[in-house]
Length: 464
View 1: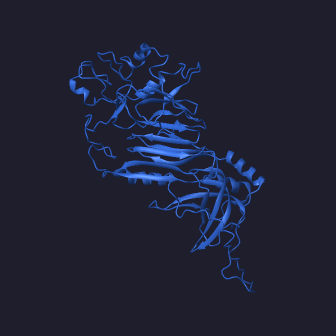
View 2: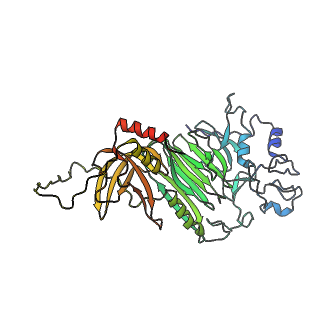
C-alpha cells in the first residue's frame, strides 16, 4: 500500500554529510558564498541570488548577477548522478518513519507535488516525502521547470526564467513540431511463449520517449551494444534513473503491476525496447518523436529486423454466440470419376539427414497447429497457431501465416493437426511484404514426443 508521510529536514543526516556529498567535491557541483550546497547534476539550473556565487554544474565562483535569471549553459558530464537521485540517496541507511529499519531510496515522480522530495523505497511498494527538494532541482526529467522555494518555475528554452519561449517536441526552441513525426503505437502481441519479445526499435534522435503497461510482465531496454540497460538476463532491476544512449531513462514500477519508462532524449544511438512476458500481454503502449529524415530509415530497419507486421496479419476469430450458431458445412456428394489436375505424389522426406539439413538451414523451427488453409493462384497459405518455438531469428507471433509455393504443397498439412515446421523468411524487394515460407519437400512432420526429441537432438548438431 502506498503511503505518503511528510517529515521536515534531513532526519538523522547531518548537514556536514549533505555538504560532503552535494558540495564542491561532487562530480558536477560548485559551492556558493552563502554555504548553500552545490548540485550533483541538474543540467545547469540557477538557485542562488545575484549576490551569491553560482551553485551550478561547472560554474566558477563569482558568477555574474544574470546567473540568478539565466540558466547556466554547461551540461553535466556523462555518468554524473542526477540531482534528485542524490538527495534521495542521502537517506540510504538512515532510520526513518520512527523505526530503526533502513531503506535504499530512489526518486518517485508519481506524487502530486513535483517539488517535494518524494523517494521510493527500493523493493517496496511505498514512497516517502522528505520535505522540499533543494532549490534548482528540475521539477521532472526532461523539462525546463525548476523548483525554487517549493514551487515549480518554468524556464524558457532561451535560458531565461519566466520566458515564454518553449522547445517543441522536435527540440527546436520556438518551433511548431513540423520538423519531426510522432510515433505512437500499442504492441498487442499475446506471445506464443514466455520470454523476451521485441516491442520496438527506438532509433537515434528520438525524443520524449514513453512506454507503459499494466501487467505482471516487465519492460526491458537494450542498448546499441547489445547489453541490457535494465531488466535483462531474466533479472528484474530496481526502479530508478538509468543512463542510456546519451539520455536519462526513468524507469518506475508501482503497486507491482504498473510500469513506465520515460526519457527526454535525444538518443545518441539506437535502443531496443522489449517486454519480458510472464503472462498474456494486455498491450504495451509506446510513443516518441522522431526527426523526419530519420523516419524512413527507422521503418526500413524495423522491417529488416522483423519487427514490422507481416502482411497480411492473422486475426483471432471470436467464437459465435449460441443465439447465432454457425451454419453447418454442406458436404457435396461424391461423384465418381478422376479429380481434375490431381496433385502428384510427394517425394520421400524421411530420415535424419533431411531433418538436420532443414533445421540448420531454416530461419524458424516451431510447433504449430493448422487452423486454416487457402489455395490461391500458385500458392497455398496456411494459418497456424504457434505453440512452441525451437529456433527463431526474429520474433514469431501467436498467429502466423505460412506460405507454400504451390497449390499442391509437399508435404500437405491437414487441418486441426499439430506439426513441426521448418520455415524460411522471405522479404519482398521493396520491404513491404514479409513471409514465412515452407519450402517444397521441406521439413513438415506431425508432432509427436519422439519427433520432438529428434528435433532437439538436431539443434545440437548444427555447425556454428
